[in-house]
Image (cartoon, rainbow over the protein chains, first blue to last red):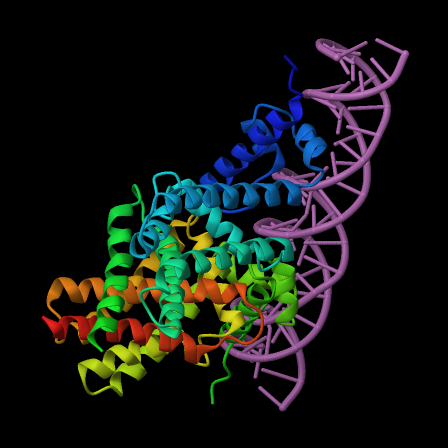
Length: 196
Length: 196
DNA sequence: TTTTGTTGATTGGTCAGTCAATAAAAAATA
DNA sequence: TATTTTTTATTGACTGACCAATCAACAAAA
């Protein structure tokens, strides 16, 4: 039985600690010491494994993105029809794991930071493109191309908007009503199409 | 002719400088020196008039809010029917003056900061409530209460979402397509209602 | 004995906020 | 009007705190 090195363990712990710290503070200006402290190690060690703060933050964002992507694939795999694919793609963003004060705050903070960091901006664009294409895979069978495209755009904007607005409220996030709002908008668009 | 004191002049200049600095950097971590420098004064003077950085930032947010409010009143006054009131309330958010990279970045940064600062959070809630009620004044004559409420919620979230997504793109903001997207969503909802 | 893991101490830089000093304008006084 | 006094406007220089990043040293495994 090969003993694992400490590196992956520490990296994971530090990334988790970073999410927690960012979520609590609500922004990216958390100190390496704070993050390292939460992970139970010294700040020197965080530097040892990640080199610089930017890298740790970037890795953290990548982690968030990867988790969302994983959940998304899983949800889509379970959906059998185009219509359920759309709903699945929407629901993932408001799942128990994603739609938490901590995660929401982190996403938001990264959005802001993306204006400074080209690397982050690139990552967020990847996410945007993926969401769009996932939505499109369900929408194109139901709507003509231009409408489908516009619907996907609207849904994506709605999701981001609900995230940002959620950040202003206090108390536990209400995923159900958020989903209902998006679904309602989608239903309108689909019904609208059928009329003609 | 009473000579005006310098105070209001400096305050205005510093607030403008703050917006410019925040917009350029894309976040609130701008230095007092930077802001003061843009306004052509020393950082000591900025402290003299505003006391602390927080206060300057708060005043800046208040300024942004007041301007939006002013534009909104003007736009609503020119609208004669409920339907045009809704469109006016939407369009203001994407007007030449509001929907600029600089202003968008500042709004976004303030949203994030609001998670730390209760005072900012309160201000943003005022804005949210105002937008909601302005939208409702146009929506209630056209939709039953619960649908109107939901539509207002959706429109508000869409606007915020389009702001945040806009911040990720580069190049000039495309107000026209943003408005079209929101209007399209609204049209769907109104048509949807008529069907029943 | 080499590699891996870990830290305390240190450094260099940045920045908010303070303060004493100065200049300029206004008001009060002679 | 000419003068002193007070108020307003402004700054350079400084301080105290904080923090990312480095490094030499130590411990523990391999």
